[in-house]
Image 1: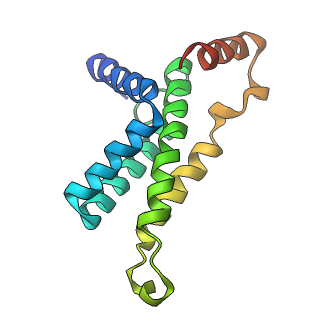
Image 2: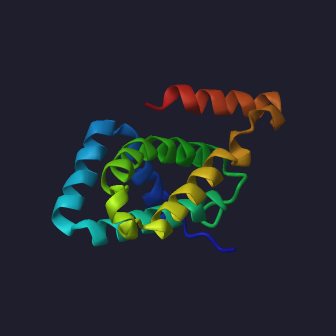
Length: 144
């Protein structure tokens, strides 16, 4: 697989911006996107987010041995899931009388991404050498 360094650097900038943004700002951005785009387009945006995140977690974007980038990606995805989950619960669980409006494909993609994130080999630090654990610890502690 050939990697484009320019795209890699650009993605790191985006990851750093999301990581440095307060969760409330991310939530407000997503909520305003919902207000502007409407429910169906917002559901499409979330589906695309879940699929891109799943692809990243499957190392389609970066090799699995790019430890710092992968840890940063995991931190960003975990941070993003807080406001996304809040909006999913608030906006995409219809009342029982409107159960036909339930977007099962959206929830399937959300749970698939979340399970991929939580079962990631990158998070199993017990399997890493002490040197790699030190790198993981320093990345986790030094980034906001």
